[in-house]
Length: 366
View (cartoon, one colour):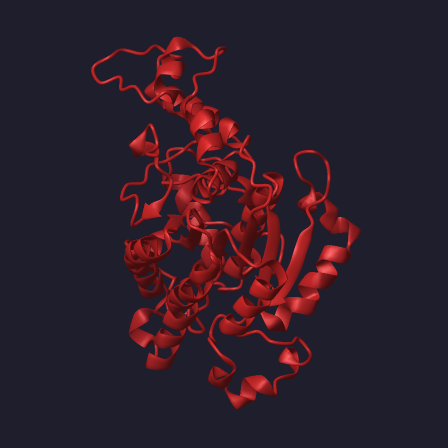
């Protein structure tokens, strides 16, 4: 099933090569992502009805757009602005995507350690759609994350659209730098931050998930790390460069190769990229820009290979600058502002829409 409006496709991977901005209201951006994941996870009939059926209450011009008709050469008067039309169209699609039912689907989101990032927001929207949510968290912060979830102050971040609180079925310790126990160096094995967390390599986590749930319908790769991210590329060591590539790009390859055999046909894999993959972003160093470019290249190859072998989809999305805890940790630069603060300032000064970006709407995609 092809989207009725290819120019608005929010996914970039082997199955979609173009991305364009979607201007949606708060909380609708990620709902659209949940809709796209639901499509790939087997909810074809539900989504085809949601995306293709015209709304009786919609103006004729908007009904034409939602049914996929083209308006080349036509004049559409919606507040006198095609920009407003695009906003209305995106909002309609997003609201219809809210109707996706992912009940019975199992989603594994790797790289969630707090409630401020995209991974958490994606997990919450999948829970809104009824999916069983599993999370993989970096072992050194696992106990801190589990403690945060028990606090009453976190309830607002856990609240779903129906007023209930999101339930995470299980949190697995996951260090995506390692595929198997023999890959873990001695200094990590004996590190007290890893003590008592149990098995945490990618291969071990996959086996645990298989034993616990038998399948994964949706796999979200929401992790990245570059130990030398504050260094310019000219000053990045070989070890730092390769570490960024291993944690931020190869981890996707490893996860897809190991999760795919237990994913039903129609399953979906999603990763998060960044504009530094194709543009110079000063301050985003240590080989991280290279790792994001590699992630996007690998996504296209994995989409072909995993699609042909397992019948699953692999895509990546490029989100805007969000002041998450991880992004804020990159450190201060000129003027005393952190990298992410300067990135947000740049976007505010240059983006067509200068609204603040929240995790719930952060996948206002382009």
